[in-house]
Image 1 (cartoon, rainbow, N blue to C red):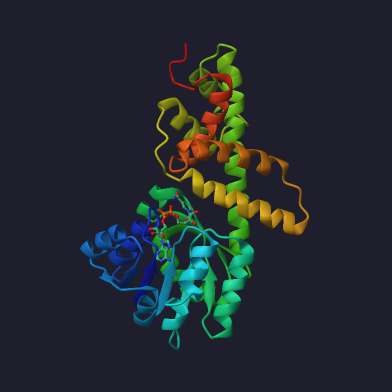
Image 2 (cartoon, rainbow, N blue to C red):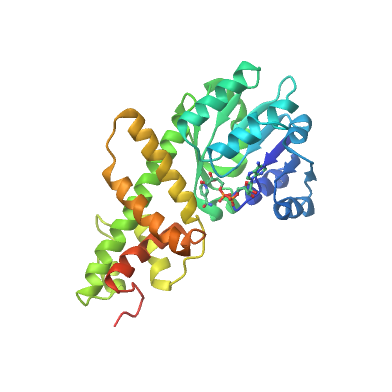
Length: 297
Ligand code: NAD
């Protein structure tokens, strides 16, 4: 099949490579040439813009940072819709605001282009291994039709409902990871200040009710002093912002999300925006002067 892929960043590059490996003809574009060059070396065809990708593709996949980028790429001047042709379909795999997904999907439908949303979870490693978890929203028939393509990039696919349901599900995921990372930091800093090594506490509790992937993954980053993204702090701020906007539009108070959002913003303002979102843990280290290292003395 002829597939278009727009947005060749941390996630898009390995996802696109897996589509190539599965034997699909891939037409690619990104405003930054680095990702395009890497994909061309792997066998993809470089296009001069988003419209040109659409003109050559039966299915166009987008993997972009946030709602404004998706609006520009799909609805904007020189965008995907300008390159539309009968039968073309769109899968937006970016994590964006559910309201924006609905808006973009409606505009696409009005000109006869069906759109599926499919934000992902699983990080760069999941993208490389083709084991992402997908949260899909849109018409069920469209989801069924596009599932074979989605399967190449993932090991778990969940149909969540109409357009917006996939990104709503993703926001629930992002909210929990953000708040849990902050909770781990606060609690472990208290433990370390009281004189118990983070690693001792971790080994004691990881098999109990507090055990989790967030505890394993994010605490290890702090203990190893390795905050290389991974998932960039600034992208997590974007997700929390989308969660807060969604919650506020629905009248749902979200005090925990607001609090962690401010801590993340503080760290971003202090130069950690491109670090992994685990950098929020350093906020608690900064205010106490305690580092969650492996050998804390
Ligand atoms: P990224 O910033 O590394 O990549 C985004 C790419 O989009 C960049 O290469 C950028 O140049 C390109 N782009 C931006 N505007 C464009 C335009 N107008 N036309 C063409 N290309 C454009 O981000 P990422 O880490 O790959 O994440 C992509 C999405 O996936 C985000 O919504 C993110 O929240 C989500 N996500 C990321 C991870 C992760 O671990 N990195 C995990 C799950 C979900």
